[in-house]
Length: 307
Length: 323
Image 1 (cartoon, chains in turn purple, cyan):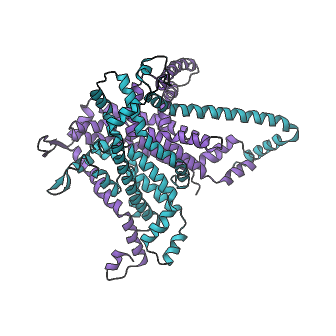
Image 2 (image 1 turned 120 degrees about the vertical axis):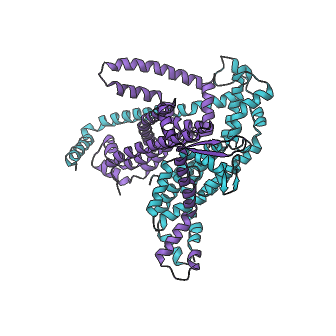
């Protein structure tokens, strides 16, 4: 039945055969993972310790071992690395809760039955197409350059919004709200367009999560006389908590791949600073992973698993 | 757990359903329902506008004639619409041949993704083998540590691709993408493997046991029994893969893929090409040509999305993507 098993003289047990079959199924991925993924990660570590020079004419590579010089350079003498890294991470941290709340909110809205739901859903998932890479970049450039049309009117609205926002800061400043909280809200208002654009996949995930909640739980809540508000907090939110973790991971990774620090690393190696670029990639990825691990750990402690 | 609260809540429910309160609560409820509906409509329309505004702007601009673009009275709806922008954009982007090549490339990569990722997902979902937990953890690592991190080593790997002295430069071709995808390291492959694993885990085992008893081998079971049952997961992954691959800038930039292969690369150079060939200086007018180009590039993905969107959303709901 199985080729690898048939060649051998001795008979394999059922478990052994199954293990072999399992490996044949994952084999392509396994080879690729070990050769390309792990291989490239190891190379990245090597590159970060080297000063690489490639002769433009002949293409001959020359490696000089420089120990941790690239790391020292990145953190002490590079003009924009530290700043870009911190601003990328801060942006990520500001956007993350907004995206999670917004997409959960929209998923709750879209999960109800109403007229034209199909059309609205199609519109809400459009950003998955529009905001990703190539065409998204082109559209961003277009909206920046555009002098006439709807886009200019939206930017006018945004300007008007930011004016009134500073007015509200003054207004609520007397309420003795901490300035950081106010600043966060103001910032979030300014980011609303980008938050909407980057929460397409998260909305899909939350809708799928909401659909998977057994209807019997809602029936029980209704019979016990819970209000809609109570049902939301006692049934819906606990049931989607595990998916909040999934969405957090997705959002952080997505934000990281489109962040400035990744493009800084790409720019750096295109300017032939190979070692430095490797350092940028390593440090930013490590920082993101640590933050992600912390968030997932904290969320996981508060998560209730139904099954 | 919360028995006192439950009792008070149920008492409240009883009170509100009492006879003397009936008419009052009816009026109150219908008013509340109306307000909630209004609130929902306002929010949905508002968010839809934010999403659609740039798209509407680009589409309407692409029909503007030169007079319209300088006339400050014209807003969104052109007075003298023209198709010139499209004619030029099609001509200078070499639209149909390059679009054909792009679609061929995208669909090829997508088919490979579907095959490799579903195989890996099936292996993880249905077979027990040593180190399985470790390898599955590696899938999660692939999702968390994106390809962007290893961009430069990837660049070098395919700049000097081969073993020993047999080294070739695979840049400026589609080979790196196909090789990486065929070995499960394509764009977001980790995510797709994860989706397939979760989906296959959710399917009942009895079907395969029946197939095994009837004498089907594992490949036959996989191709003829599991794959036809996996259509929700297949649609989900196919839509993600087509859309993301078509729009991809990462592989295109890393491997410096030529603009004769990818229409999105052609779009980047469109403004310069038209400016040189037609001797147009006005940035505002060039922008109109660019808008037409954007619309042309977006048409295929939006068409695919509209055709598949209903099954796609249903697929996401049923494919156990949320696991």
